[in-house]
Image (cartoon, rainbow, N blue to C red; front, side, top):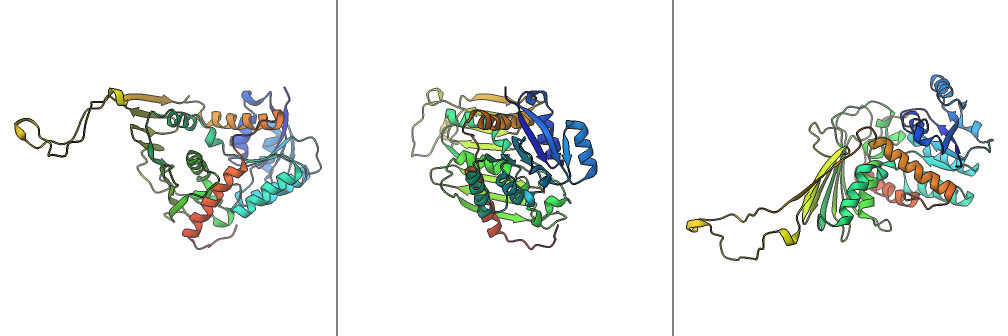
Length: 359
């Protein structure tokens, strides 16, 4: 089995604790090897040298002369993604870029065109689309047991204050750029109409952030012949109830990343009913409420408690390996992410926030 030689730029929470942790995992050792790490901070760089037994650099430019690297993971600070990715592509590297990939559609178009011009692989790390819970939700929806789907509620909510660089607009921070690429990518995948822009309504605000970017987002997406999607990314929800809630004509689903429940009925098992236009009566001609007991079929999903996040990352890098080694078309591609960035741009157009800080 061919082993891909990987360089990681950045050893923060993403570069070390997500990508780096995966590449050190037993499930990756036959397919990937970290041969270089870049980080400007001495202690991170020294730790990486010990953890990966690899070359380390303070500046990514030191990678540009190497010809033995199959893939570079760009996990730098968000506002640096675009320029560094383009530079890497122009120097002949394949690149996986962290989220948010960039700020605007025009920036992403430039990245896509650069990859195409150089004949290089370029993709965005949208691993949540390959998470076990989301794959199961798609399977249930595709089965049709819930009937026609009218509404999908997605809540990536909690109550938390934040004061790091990801609260700054100048760094492409805020809830929509930070967390939004996970649920928004899923939402647009469920709409499954990448050639057309959905209708967008968005309300954003600053609740208790220490920066100048939003920490409250309510986003409504609609499209012809598609379910309404109600997406929340709120840092001021003290009572978060679920991640997904789905309204269907014959049932519904509710739950989170670790587990969820769904129930539905079959037409052939339901009580036979017909329209009655006259007032409903019960015994002794007393008024009656229109109600019945449906024969619910109830089902439950439980993810492996030790691996829901790891599985998503593994699925993503399996896709990446198959693309680079076996020439397989990746399930996730930058063209799809382009729609996500277009929606985020529109949300910010509808909610202009004053910029108060520079990095």
